[in-house]
Image (cartoon, rainbow, N blue to C red; front, top):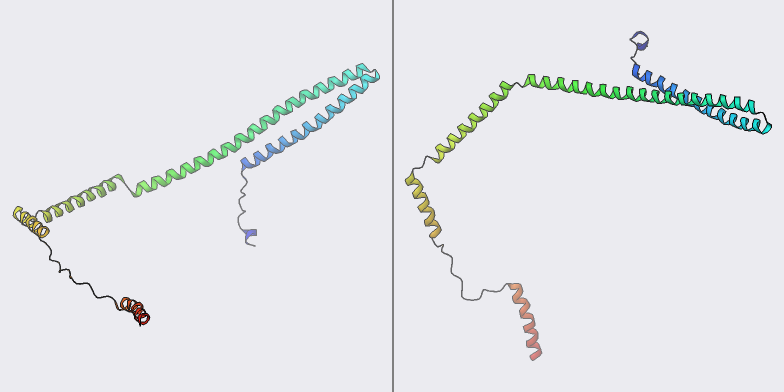
Length: 200
């Protein structure tokens, strides 16, 4: 019931769509006319042949003049169809162009809004702050690295050399064979027992 008292729904069909539809309907009517005239031309040609066989040459000539006139109409109809199709294509392409222009307009508005949020001055300010932060960090690094004197640096290098020159004392390698694992000893003992039993 809300639709009864509310505003009318706006149709999605535009004036351009209506124009295209009308042009296509007119084109279709012209094509039907062409088919009908082509069929009539074939019939008239057959009738003209029949008249010539019967010896009615003047009547056949008159019929062929009429046929020639209809052929000229067919040529004109073909040109009209081509014009209609060109018009339809032009309207459809113009609709596409309009959508492209609308898209460009919307994109331009978005860019302008973004530029209002982010001005050149703000960008320059952010870049300056970044440069200052990088410079500040570089100064801190220099202070930390520069807190050692040349004597301290020399002492650090000497200590490093001394550590690399020292020989690390390793434990001595035993000269006696290592004791076997109990599993291996048991496995060797079994064949030995078998030998003893076989020898006795």
